[in-house]
Length: 173
Image (cartoon, helix red, strand yellow):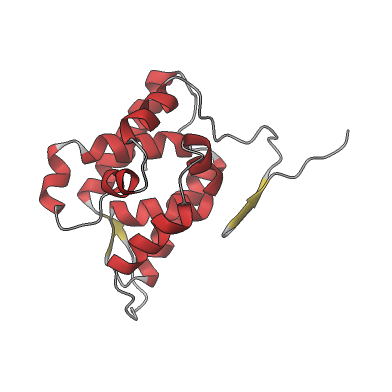
């Protein structure tokens, strides 16, 4: 992973690896990144599209992925996932943000699905299709992110993250 990531974005990537592990995958695929985003920054999807049912997206994805027992091994990133993270870095740079946030990873997922890289994985669950099934236009989400209407960075730099639950802790000064 090149570039600087926000705490939430690092947590999302960690959660993506975790999701790949519990589903028995040998590589982190884009669908694991989606699950990682849902686990690490659930609020991101609500900021992008308040009408979106994130539980429905998680259930849809998990129903399409198998859960297998795996041996402990190093899980690497699949080529499409590396492309998504590269697109996230470009989104961050073009928006002038010093760090890659979860909103940039989401934008990278949406952009990546439009590229030829994902054509190799047509049988895999696609975020854009799931968003459309929920009545949300992925293009509008991308526009909101690029317009700066979605900013997942915690307002408090002292935010503490734990696996599955990310709550900013505000200290009185």
